[in-house]
Length: 391
Ligand code: NAD
Image (tube, rainbow, N blue to C red; front, side):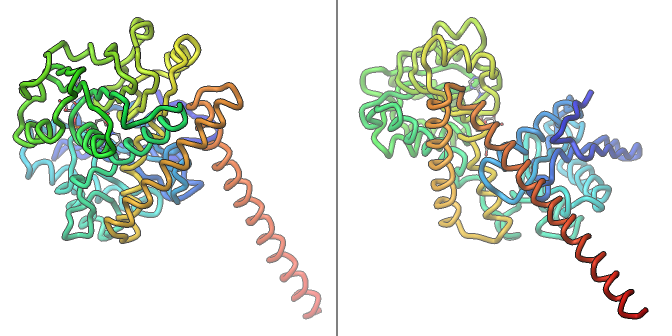
């Protein structure tokens, strides 16, 4: 069941083709600021409800990053691991064909779980526009995922939050949950800034070295050779969920949703949490952490916006250099803004961020309707003048 409110969704489209087994949908949540932007999720269980919540998160993320995009997301029900590359291309190609009326004017796609640059090449070629999606291969003007824009943005949010808390980053300790694209690049950039990464986890477990810290280069080598971080050989191996309660200054969730739930609130020791993953803590537990533990939390819609900012740079044909500059500029400005405002207004950083996002959308919407009224009034007065003249 999709919830509707003042902000959207504007359109929910479902497309099916029994012959090739396509069942897909797109939720265009809000296009006040520009065409809805959001990835294509390909999983066996993806639902309209899941996609609509993700589309709404994109509406807020894009408004906060001040990008000329609205929010959207789409889904194709299929098991991307068990179908062939040819079948995947067939599904994505047919999906694109059926979305031609809204893409790229109202919807711009991107990779998400189960889709990557190969699928984006099929999508944009079928639509017949390079603006139909971002995350394309480099030969089609794409900015590679391997640049680590999201992890870089997370490292920027961490620096700003540490400064806000009066913490010296080069004397601080950090734990990172998940060592994929987001976690490994956040670790790389933070280690470069002098922070000590003392705990890291992946699907197999967690490794902790509170004294010397972990060797980030070595961890990246392990990840690149498809090995687990627990094989690094210079720390204590512990269950992966224990990362939540490690005695560190900063905790960076960068893997699963709902990492921190009710019973974890008491055991969190980090003074700062930077949300690299999507919804690692529900708004309710974020509030509890702030009230009971005084934890400073930079929410996902601010901290992990590096990916969508990089998509925008690809969309306008910008360079890698420009991408890093824009991620740094927008994420540092927004992190500082929401932390200062939430302190002043005694609200959570997420509540502050949502307030700003809503205000930006409503202002633009008001401006657009005022312009429409003005244009209509002008057209009417011109018609009356010409009628009077001819009579
Ligand atoms: P990824 O697939 O590259 O890496 C995921 C990592 O998490 C892997 O190291 C995996 O072993 C680990 N992991 C999985 N389950 C775990 C568990 N239970 N405990 C600890 N580790 C676990 O994924 P990613 O691209 O790094 O994305 C991570 C999160 O960030 C996701 O929630 C994603 O939606 C979100 N995100 C990613 C981007 C991006 O640009 N990649 C942008 C915004 C948000």
